[in-house]
Amino acid sequence: MTGFRRLAPLLLAGFLSFLVAATGSGSPAPLSIAVEGPQTGSQAPNGRDQLRGVRLAVSQLNAHGGLWNGRKVAIFQANDKAEASRGKAVARQVIAKGIRFVIGPYNSSVGLANLSIYRRHHVLPLWMTSEDKTGGIGATVQPMNSQIAPIEARYVEKLHAKRVAMLVDDTANGAFTKGMATRLRAALQKAGAAVDWISIKETTAKGLPNTYYADEVSKALGTKPDLVYVSTYFPEGVRIAKALAKAGGNPPCLMGLANVDNAFVAQTTLSQAQRCDFSGVPAATEMPSAKTYVGQYRAAFGKKPSVWGSFTYDSARILFRAINRAKSFDLAKVERALRRTKGFHGATGRIAISSKTGYRKIVPVSILRVNKQKRFVLAK
Image 1 (cartoon, rainbow, N blue to C red):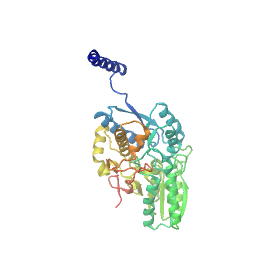
Image 2: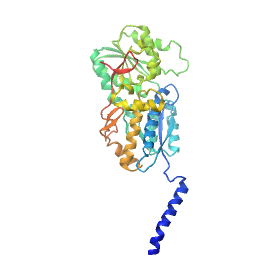
Image 3: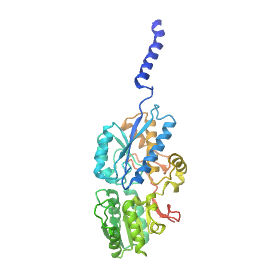
Image 4: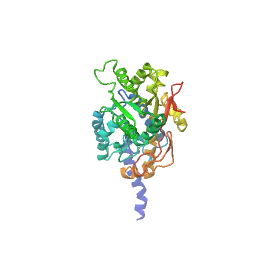
């Protein structure tokens, strides 16, 4: 027995040396997480901002030793180009890599196509979609349609609008924009308002005449509305804002959340950008809670952050926190820890997650305007 005790440390040392040689470093392999979004294509400014948000969170985590067991994190870029037709293939690519956590997708139309695939193959999403039909297993810090719609309805109610013209991206890739417009239309009609719905095609659609957006805006104004409501993504919103500004005068205009992006103000003049109010979330530079994040983002990437990178940054951080609290990579345990998130100080404000839905309990959505510095700020 005494001989064994003397020999045991040598055997253990030999075994550990074998493990180090086998792994090459003695450290566990990095945990790969996917970041899915439109990293190229017409909505690439959004997708790249989101990717940078996660990169920042990962670099900070890894610099402090990684996860609870010393495991570092690596990112797999899953580019869906904001196209619903690519959603399934992108999800299968992530699944084939053996990845078990995904931040994204961003576009609701993509999420409707692939979130069920992720969940069926035991990949836990921190989804960035807002259409309520994309909810399910996982969690989100993003505002959902049912949370945004009441804010828009109150805005319209204050205007006493009796006739509203809606310009809506209701294409295959417009699940979010169509869903928001549908909710608002129902609320308006219930209150006795008349609503004219005008379908809007994407800027990427083939064969659009140069006057297409101006013509659609002319149709909307031809209905003599008390309000023009624009539910599109920002590439289409830019063209509509230009056409509305050129038409001049009234009526007032409200643009939906998907137009709130630095790329929108970059591609419009001040008068064009100020033609409408917006429902949405201010850019990170306008959120007091994001002051530290903004400085770190600029130092890391040499760029000013936009809107949604702060949301993916927070998504990554609450995921890492949940993994550490669960002390496990088991999806059920991590999801339970995620849905117990409360009082988390994020770049996007205080975060608490509903244990029942995975939704954020209080979302930072307001009515915004563009100020003289071409920034989205809270409307007064």
